[in-house]
Amino acid sequence: MRLVKENGHIFEEWLTPSEIDSCVQAVADQISADFKNREPLFVIVLNGAFVFGADLVRKVNLRCEVTFIRVKSYTGMNSTGTLEYLVPLQQSVEGRDVILIEDVIDSGLTIHYLKKHMSENGAASVRTVSMLFKPEALKYDDAEPDYVAKLITKEFVIGYGLDYDGWARNLDAIYRLKE
Ligand code: IMP
Ligand code: MG
Image (cartoon, rainbow, N blue to C red; front, top):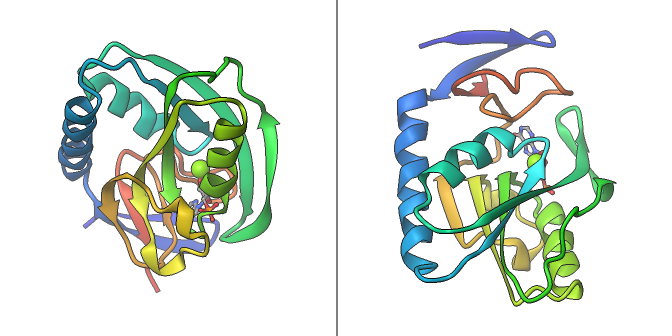
């Protein structure tokens, strides 16, 4: 099992690149089937979802558009409880079937506010897909994702887009805190 050290903590490999690939393919297939004959607008939530989003949209077999929004809710290993819009939406969501792409849903704060934001801006429908979902940490019931690649307990993970204070996003696997 591979280990990495980040910011003084040891992390161990939890999901290998090939396991990630299978999970991502499975959700992509579900989305392709559910959105058959529709042309969704994928909104990749930056920064964390850039890797998962890039893999997912290439596995989805649909005519679609891809755009980005950048928000921040985390510092270090903890949620701050508020959402900052660092880069707003660059494209209209009016009348669109929006699919938000997240790296991980933890408290649900990010998705709670983003769903509201999409509806207020006239989206026809809003669905959420997340690489990881921590059901035990969920505080906003409406933030439960429609599609999840992998469930996880309340632990802190890095890699495959997920960071520890900006570092470790480039790891090709997902690593969990070893303690
Ligand atoms: P939420 O708003 O509490 O659901 O948190 C979601 C955001 O917090 C994610 O998009 C991540 O950026 C960050 N986050 C939550 N858990 C982790 C983790 O285990 N590792 C790295 N980032 C995380
Ligand atoms: Mg994120």
